[in-house]
Length: 424
Image (cartoon, rainbow, N blue to C red; front, side):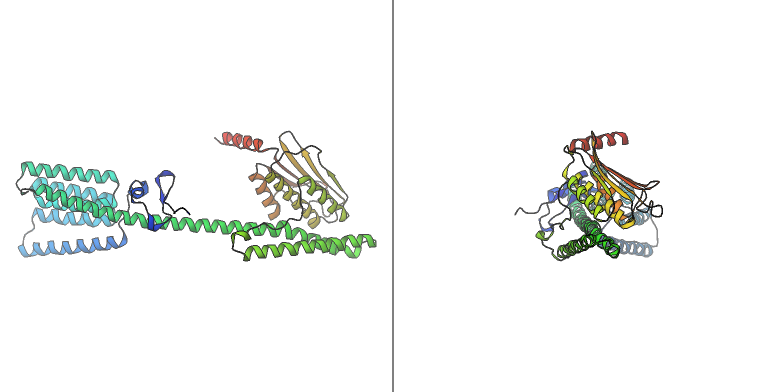
């Protein structure tokens, strides 16, 4: 099995799949690492404590000497600038450069160079690369000026300042990498949590669809024929109702058992789909649904083309589920319909399903309007996903549903491209 690797994302982001094998090189070239960032909370507390001690020492010297010199003012301003790294690193970096530059130019003091070199660590830990470059350039220019024109640097003092600057930079870089690593891990954990939540929602939707599309359909048949059983005119009709009740109850039980197995089985092999009531393509299913309506004493006309439909298997299945939903709605909401029809029409670029029913005046329009319940909403979502559409509305004497899908995968690609161009 290959070892997990760091996975760079678009835009220079970096995700870490294995904390123990993080590539330092990939972190150093990642834009995510070099973005301006705040100090780590622990480093922020330590910085404030150190600055507070330095301020107390400076105030002690001022009180002991009994005078307040310009150097003391610059020192207090520098400590305030360093403390600002805890909240506003960019502002703090430029404040430090200005204050130390003024001190070095006005007094020619190597102490200001030392403070500027030490502050490079804070800049490296928090600021963007261009700020770090400016800080290094300012430090180099002031050091060269004092070395050439001043006398406060001893022999080899330039190397001492350079060494301290390098050490400070490496320390700041270490803090940056640690902080960036923690941020990347937090981002990765959040992404994993979001993915798991998405998978859980998809699984819930899948189970809900199985319950609605399969079990609800079977239970609708059971309820319809159970209510009609006492009013059946002869023994043959009663046997049809009894057979339908028994068959639908068995199908519903099988689906429930399959769903329970799916929920309980966490292995990869347990993710199989539930058994379907209707096998075959949309033409076979429509024929079975027409017979189902006829068994329910609803005169039904079924019309299907003799030529191949040309829809993709996924689009064909979406159209099949829509037909099942439409017939279920007729049985549930308009059981006394005077007639019904289920048609499959092969258009030049689409395959169209048309389901109609003619109801009694009392039940007219009871099947559903343009919005519909959960079943029609999910059917519309499935069809849109495959490049189709669904319309459902009440008519003067009943209800009609029209659903279309592209006649081929090429047509779907053409329609998507057309819609994309129209959006732009």
